[in-house]
Length: 240
Image (cartoon, rainbow, N blue to C red; front, side, top):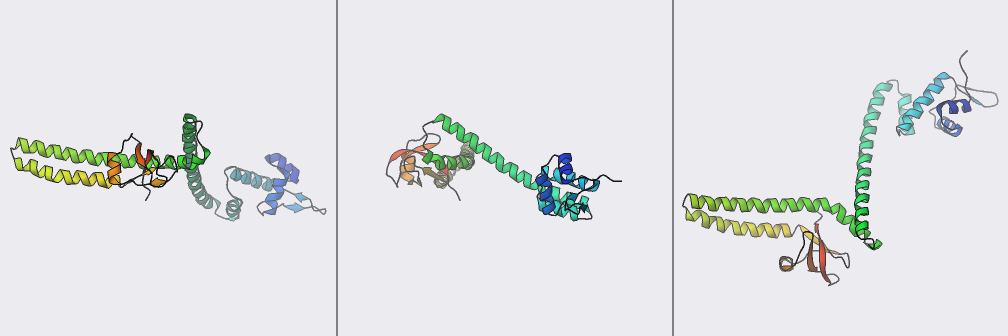
Protein backbone atom coordinates (compact mmCIF):
# COMPACT_ATOMS: atom_id res chain seq x y z
CA UNK A 1 0.00 0.00 0.00
CA UNK A 2 1.38 3.39 -1.02
CA UNK A 3 2.16 6.01 1.57
CA UNK A 4 -0.57 8.54 2.29
CA UNK A 5 0.31 12.04 3.44
CA UNK A 6 -1.75 14.77 5.03
CA UNK A 7 -1.21 18.45 4.26
CA UNK A 8 0.84 18.75 7.44
CA UNK A 9 2.97 15.73 6.52
CA UNK A 10 3.68 17.16 3.10
CA UNK A 11 4.59 20.54 4.55
CA UNK A 12 6.94 18.99 7.11
CA UNK A 13 8.71 16.76 4.59
CA UNK A 14 9.41 19.66 2.21
CA UNK A 15 10.13 22.38 4.78
CA UNK A 16 7.27 24.69 3.84
CA UNK A 17 4.22 25.84 5.76
CA UNK A 18 0.79 24.23 5.62
CA UNK A 19 -0.52 27.49 4.22
CA UNK A 20 1.98 27.23 1.33
CA UNK A 21 0.76 23.74 0.43
CA UNK A 22 -2.83 25.01 0.55
CA UNK A 23 -1.86 27.99 -1.61
CA UNK A 24 -0.36 25.72 -4.28
CA UNK A 25 -3.56 23.70 -4.23
CA UNK A 26 -5.59 26.88 -4.67
CA UNK A 27 -3.41 27.94 -7.61
CA UNK A 28 -3.92 24.56 -9.25
CA UNK A 29 -0.34 23.29 -9.33
CA UNK A 30 -0.57 20.78 -6.43
CA UNK A 31 -3.96 19.18 -6.09
CA UNK A 32 -4.49 16.30 -3.62
CA UNK A 33 -4.86 12.77 -4.91
CA UNK A 34 -7.85 12.12 -2.62
CA UNK A 35 -10.24 13.83 -0.23
CA UNK A 36 -11.72 12.27 2.90
CA UNK A 37 -15.43 12.44 3.61
CA UNK A 38 -14.65 15.30 5.96
CA UNK A 39 -12.84 17.20 3.20
CA UNK A 40 -9.26 16.57 4.36
CA UNK A 41 -6.67 16.54 1.57
CA UNK A 42 -4.68 13.35 1.09
CA UNK A 43 -1.50 13.16 -0.93
CA UNK A 44 0.55 10.28 -2.34
CA UNK A 45 4.25 9.83 -3.12
CA UNK A 46 3.85 11.36 -6.58
CA UNK A 47 2.35 14.47 -5.00
CA UNK A 48 5.29 14.74 -2.63
CA UNK A 49 7.73 14.55 -5.54
CA UNK A 50 5.70 17.18 -7.40
CA UNK A 51 5.85 19.50 -4.38
CA UNK A 52 9.61 19.02 -4.14
CA UNK A 53 9.87 20.04 -7.80
CA UNK A 54 7.69 23.08 -7.17
CA UNK A 55 9.78 24.11 -4.17
CA UNK A 56 12.99 23.77 -6.18
CA UNK A 57 11.64 25.90 -9.02
CA UNK A 58 10.37 28.48 -6.54
CA UNK A 59 13.86 28.62 -5.00
CA UNK A 60 15.06 29.66 -8.47
CA UNK A 61 12.41 32.41 -8.39
CA UNK A 62 10.21 30.82 -11.06
CA UNK A 63 6.72 32.28 -11.05
CA UNK A 64 3.60 30.22 -10.34
CA UNK A 65 2.53 30.65 -13.97
CA UNK A 66 5.89 29.39 -15.25
CA UNK A 67 5.66 26.36 -12.97
CA UNK A 68 2.08 25.70 -14.06
CA UNK A 69 3.19 25.87 -17.70
CA UNK A 70 6.04 23.44 -17.09
CA UNK A 71 4.01 20.91 -15.11
CA UNK A 72 1.19 20.88 -17.66
CA UNK A 73 3.45 20.14 -20.66
CA UNK A 74 4.11 16.63 -21.95
CA UNK A 75 7.55 17.58 -23.28
CA UNK A 76 8.79 18.96 -19.95
CA UNK A 77 12.55 18.96 -20.73
CA UNK A 78 12.08 21.15 -23.83
CA UNK A 79 9.80 23.54 -21.95
CA UNK A 80 12.25 23.66 -19.03
CA UNK A 81 15.05 24.60 -21.43
CA UNK A 82 13.02 27.51 -22.77
CA UNK A 83 12.01 28.64 -19.29
CA UNK A 84 15.59 28.45 -18.02
CA UNK A 85 16.86 30.51 -20.96
CA UNK A 86 14.21 33.16 -20.26
CA UNK A 87 14.95 33.01 -16.55
CA UNK A 88 18.71 33.39 -17.02
CA UNK A 89 18.14 36.41 -19.25
CA UNK A 90 15.89 38.01 -16.61
CA UNK A 91 18.42 37.27 -13.85
CA UNK A 92 21.25 38.84 -15.87
CA UNK A 93 19.17 41.97 -16.42
CA UNK A 94 18.30 42.10 -12.72
CA UNK A 95 21.95 41.52 -11.80
CA UNK A 96 23.02 44.41 -14.03
CA UNK A 97 20.38 46.66 -12.46
CA UNK A 98 21.49 45.72 -8.93
CA UNK A 99 25.15 46.27 -9.85
CA UNK A 100 24.27 49.73 -11.17
CA UNK A 101 22.45 50.53 -7.93
CA UNK A 102 25.39 49.21 -5.90
CA UNK A 103 27.91 51.30 -7.84
CA UNK A 104 25.74 54.40 -7.46
CA UNK A 105 25.32 53.80 -3.71
CA UNK A 106 29.06 53.25 -3.20
CA UNK A 107 29.91 56.41 -5.16
CA UNK A 108 27.27 58.36 -3.26
CA UNK A 109 28.67 57.14 0.07
CA UNK A 110 32.12 58.31 -0.99
CA UNK A 111 30.80 61.75 -1.92
CA UNK A 112 28.85 62.11 1.33
CA UNK A 113 31.88 61.10 3.40
CA UNK A 114 33.96 63.73 1.62
CA UNK A 115 31.34 66.39 2.37
CA UNK A 116 29.33 65.35 5.47
CA UNK A 117 27.38 68.64 5.43
CA UNK A 118 26.12 67.98 1.91
CA UNK A 119 22.53 69.16 1.51
CA UNK A 120 19.87 66.54 0.84
CA UNK A 121 18.37 68.99 -1.65
CA UNK A 122 21.45 68.43 -3.82
CA UNK A 123 21.16 64.65 -3.97
CA UNK A 124 19.49 64.80 -7.38
CA UNK A 125 22.44 66.85 -8.68
CA UNK A 126 24.89 64.35 -7.22
CA UNK A 127 23.01 61.41 -8.71
CA UNK A 128 22.92 63.08 -12.11
CA UNK A 129 26.63 63.95 -12.12
CA UNK A 130 27.58 60.39 -11.15
CA UNK A 131 25.53 58.96 -14.01
CA UNK A 132 26.98 61.59 -16.35
CA UNK A 133 30.59 60.83 -15.38
CA UNK A 134 31.02 58.02 -17.91
CA UNK A 135 29.69 60.18 -20.75
CA UNK A 136 31.92 63.06 -19.64
CA UNK A 137 35.03 60.88 -19.59
CA UNK A 138 34.19 59.44 -23.01
CA UNK A 139 33.72 62.94 -24.41
CA UNK A 140 37.00 64.13 -22.86
CA UNK A 141 38.84 61.16 -24.39
CA UNK A 142 37.27 61.81 -27.78
CA UNK A 143 38.15 65.53 -27.63
CA UNK A 144 41.79 65.10 -26.63
CA UNK A 145 42.30 62.24 -29.08
CA UNK A 146 41.02 64.45 -31.91
CA UNK A 147 43.18 67.41 -30.88
CA UNK A 148 46.34 65.32 -30.43
CA UNK A 149 45.77 63.60 -33.77
CA UNK A 150 45.33 66.96 -35.50
CA UNK A 151 48.53 68.29 -33.88
CA UNK A 152 50.41 65.13 -34.87
CA UNK A 153 49.37 65.51 -38.51
CA UNK A 154 50.39 69.19 -38.40
CA UNK A 155 53.80 68.36 -36.89
CA UNK A 156 54.31 65.63 -39.50
CA UNK A 157 53.52 68.09 -42.28
CA UNK A 158 56.01 70.63 -40.91
CA UNK A 159 58.65 67.90 -40.65
CA UNK A 160 58.05 66.83 -44.26
CA UNK A 161 58.23 70.43 -45.47
CA UNK A 162 61.65 70.78 -43.80
CA UNK A 163 62.87 67.35 -44.90
CA UNK A 164 61.75 67.82 -48.50
CA UNK A 165 62.58 71.53 -48.46
CA UNK A 166 59.08 72.34 -49.65
CA UNK A 167 58.01 75.57 -47.95
CA UNK A 168 54.59 75.44 -49.52
CA UNK A 169 53.78 72.31 -47.48
CA UNK A 170 54.35 74.28 -44.27
CA UNK A 171 52.14 77.16 -45.45
CA UNK A 172 49.43 74.75 -46.55
CA UNK A 173 49.63 72.93 -43.20
CA UNK A 174 49.19 76.18 -41.28
CA UNK A 175 46.31 77.24 -43.52
CA UNK A 176 44.53 73.93 -42.94
CA UNK A 177 45.45 73.34 -39.30
CA UNK A 178 44.23 76.62 -37.83
CA UNK A 179 40.65 76.31 -39.19
CA UNK A 180 40.57 72.62 -38.24
CA UNK A 181 41.81 73.30 -34.71
CA UNK A 182 39.31 76.14 -34.29
CA UNK A 183 36.50 73.93 -35.53
CA UNK A 184 37.47 71.17 -33.08
CA UNK A 185 37.50 73.61 -30.16
CA UNK A 186 34.09 75.06 -31.10
CA UNK A 187 32.58 71.64 -31.81
CA UNK A 188 33.64 70.07 -28.54
CA UNK A 189 32.81 73.20 -26.54
CA UNK A 190 29.21 72.73 -27.65
CA UNK A 191 29.23 69.16 -26.31
CA UNK A 192 29.70 70.38 -22.72
CA UNK A 193 27.24 72.05 -20.34
CA UNK A 194 27.72 73.29 -16.79
CA UNK A 195 25.88 72.76 -13.52
CA UNK A 196 25.54 75.79 -11.25
CA UNK A 197 26.27 74.86 -7.60
CA UNK A 198 23.99 77.67 -6.36
CA UNK A 199 20.68 77.23 -8.20
CA UNK A 200 21.40 73.72 -9.57
CA UNK A 201 20.47 74.72 -13.10
CA UNK A 202 22.31 73.45 -16.16
CA UNK A 203 23.41 76.00 -18.75
CA UNK A 204 25.67 76.52 -21.74
CA UNK A 205 28.01 79.55 -21.51
CA UNK A 206 28.97 81.80 -24.38
CA UNK A 207 32.15 80.95 -26.23
CA UNK A 208 33.85 84.12 -25.01
CA UNK A 209 33.12 83.39 -21.34
CA UNK A 210 34.10 79.76 -21.82
CA UNK A 211 37.44 80.68 -23.40
CA UNK A 212 38.47 83.19 -20.71
CA UNK A 213 37.10 81.42 -17.64
CA UNK A 214 39.43 80.04 -15.00
CA UNK A 215 39.08 76.31 -14.71
CA UNK A 216 40.09 73.05 -13.05
CA UNK A 217 39.98 69.64 -14.75
CA UNK A 218 36.27 69.32 -13.87
CA UNK A 219 34.96 72.88 -13.40
CA UNK A 220 34.96 76.37 -14.91
CA UNK A 221 34.36 79.67 -13.18
CA UNK A 222 31.27 80.94 -14.95
CA UNK A 223 28.35 83.25 -14.36
CA UNK A 224 25.08 81.34 -14.23
CA UNK A 225 22.45 82.94 -16.49
CA UNK A 226 19.71 81.81 -14.09
CA UNK A 227 20.86 83.03 -10.68
CA UNK A 228 23.61 85.36 -12.00
CA UNK A 229 26.10 84.03 -9.45
CA UNK A 230 29.70 83.55 -10.56
CA UNK A 231 31.25 80.34 -9.25
CA UNK A 232 33.06 77.20 -10.27
CA UNK A 233 30.45 75.21 -12.17
CA UNK A 234 30.72 71.48 -12.76
CA UNK A 235 31.39 70.41 -16.34
CA UNK A 236 29.03 67.77 -17.75
CA UNK A 237 28.57 66.01 -21.06
CA UNK A 238 25.53 67.31 -22.87
CA UNK A 239 22.73 64.75 -22.88
CA UNK A 240 21.39 63.96 -26.36
